[in-house]
Image (cartoon, rainbow, N blue to C red; front, side):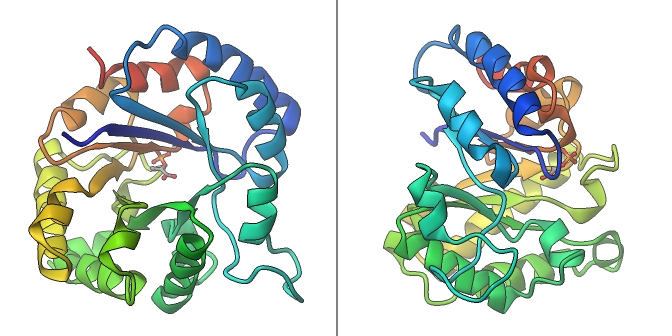
Length: 254
Ligand code: PEP
């Protein structure tokens, strides 16, 4: 049984005060969730990490960063290192998000350096992969995902994979209101699981959590999350409101 994972990626939204207000409300809501069948995570902007950690207190909320550099320190203006994140109690990070790949031109080579650094520092990584609309329309989507996973995970051994959650996020579905059909998403998740069987072994392929991202909302979450190979969701827009994010979390529980 793979434990479900629901993560909220706030992107460049919320000041520390707004983050505090969200967390106070959200933590009350998730207190009602019994058992341990779902990991719930928030990925606020760097400036709000401290306040989200503080106000999430002893709750079950995992707090992670949206990105990080691969070096511990140095002349990298504007960057944040794994050591800095660890110093505020953060050991989860999103890497390879499509906005990092496409807007900030992050290459697979750079993402691989970041994944290696994260694992060396005992981080858990949400590794995002996804094809563009053009790549899907020209039937290149499987090749693109294969290339991203093989390059981003180059030199990562089976032990390292224990700390990786893969997020399949088709670029055309992120922030657009278009969602992959549950069937299309499930098909890609199965493909990714088969890739892991080849890259590692069948035990790892069975265990690795593969979550879906791309315009997940309370209204469509359940239809995606009931699929056998969809182990959760990475949620952008709908994670900015405590009630809608809670409804998505709840859709894996009832
Ligand atoms: C994301 O940022 O990872 C994402 C899936 O965004 P949205 O839910 O807004 O499409």
